[in-house]
Image 1 (cartoon, rainbow, N blue to C red):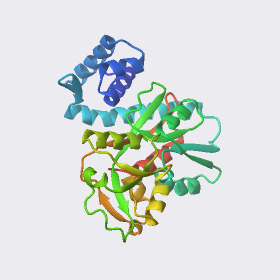
Image 2: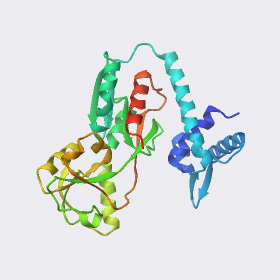
Image 3: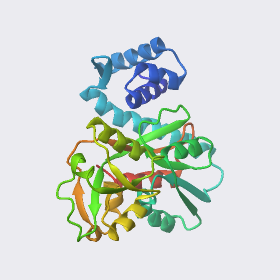
Image 4: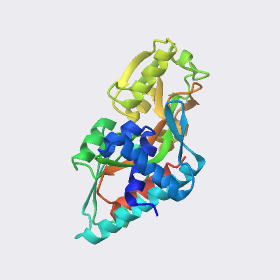
Length: 288
């Protein structure tokens, strides 16, 4: 029979897909991690990972088992929480790189928990992780993977960038990186992870973009674009929370690095009913 320790080791390895990084997060040696994974595979009677050059990847069985492992670990955490819980939660403190990630579902949580005070903060991924670790935030939505042993994470969805212009702005017919480099752009400031992904994409094609406006939120970009000739770059998740008729929307024709998003909270802290409801509502709204 498999053990909870093996499931926890397996869960971390699925997040890193790297034995060295997983071992560091777990504070164990690589051989010890490898031995526990082999024991788990032996019990299940199937391989969970296979080699891809120097990297590893989940097998079909591994991908299927991931879902069940997360459910089991979550159930154990919930059981621990139900035993140790003393009073209902009074405050819910959430952080995300944009309020659009929580705002579509937060009213539902407020209606279900009228005693609850909900606080939402717009932060960079680095700040979200730091504040979840020190319990300034109860949970957040951040880019994955989160390589921190103090953080638990659950995959939500993969986001992507979209180009937007004012409805009467016909400067852009196809949103290739080459075309985008020829027009004034409204983008996130360089402290944001998405901006670094964008910078790397332009650099990979030896293109020099014209970042006319570097702003602090997608809402700011969307507002500026409506009243200028700039082309904005925002996330598809942001647009799902808006009226799409306010802009001309073009998907990026070039393939950029995926933007996997996850629900994060302090490791060792089980999801209480309010956090569980929040997670499930966010996952349902933003599912791939």
